[in-house]
Length: 153
Figure (cartoon, rainbow, N blue to C red):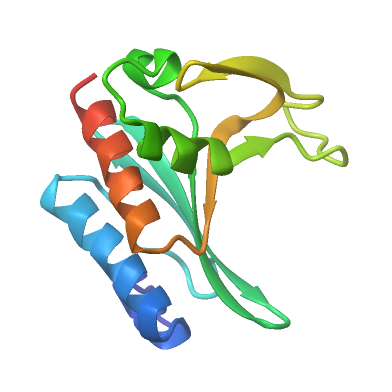
């Protein structure tokens, strides 16, 4: 079985609005010179980078009840930690996608750590501060804003 581009996997696994949102995000990443590696067959996890810096991790989860396009963002730009110049609706989207460390996690983030995200304090967060699960178009727009800020860091 040959290696596949993320776009191929999206087209094979997602449908409708989920496919459109995922492809919109991937198109944005590619237009901004974010590298997304070609993966081995049946590997649905991609580390997207820009000049060697991690931008986000993309995962297509094959679940019993369907397929989900998920994106995780670790390091946030300082302005996204403080919330400076970020509108209230965007903050709400970010806060709704805060990713706590899973209690069963045995990774380096366990048991989670405190962090400030968009000016709000959180405890017990995963190293991937944000987890966008099956994002809608409004959430994808927020994800693009974060990536744009990360590129300019």
